[in-house]
Image (spheres, rainbow, N blue to C red):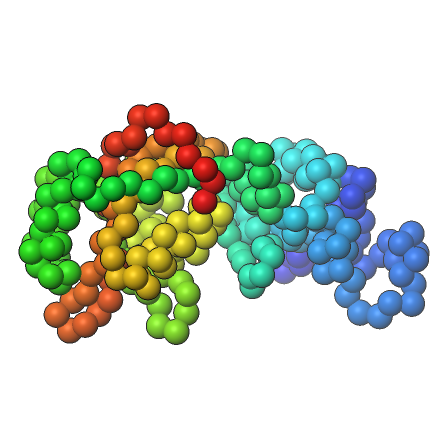
Length: 288
């Protein structure tokens, strides 16, 4: 059976056998015991590559990754036909994550997105929002808001789904807070959401909000749903977001959104997020 070969790309773009004594010597790590790959990847910007045709595992840390190493990886991927590419990485404050891609281009787009996210540019924020007035809701929102009030916040799918299709074009996401955790499960995502990356769109229903392809957008979005959950009050805002999808790259979206805190008759807590056309054409907002 073919074994998986483990190599490292250093911060200058050079390739090393992960177990090579020469690597330890060049870094003055001769006295360090055990596997040093995690230290090099997390602190020095190295990239770990474990390859067994036609699969590869790429290990890196978005905050520290060397751009020179990334270029070397790009060149390598163009010369190797990989059918399954696993990205293994850690974002600050989170556990190890693994994401699977079927093309080198999609994997590299995702890596670049993660690097930009962890870089944290404050001069050009990717996500901005302005709170809107519930008294100024457009028709697609006002009809659903009126139903929410008349139903006393009780959610019945057979009543809401026809309204969501008719007035919101099926542009909605239904969330459920996870017990004892500050995260959300995606119960259902409408087919009318303006997401150009079809596989990522199809994967939303039944997944977790933090597992959305653009995890920076997921974390940013979660704060609004968390606020609505805590206050148990509807929230309306106008949004401009540059969302990065694995297969299409960055796509700017401008839209308005209404969040309705709901519950089932049995007391199950839900949050309904409805998207619609931007109702604030002159969207000049501060980053949130």
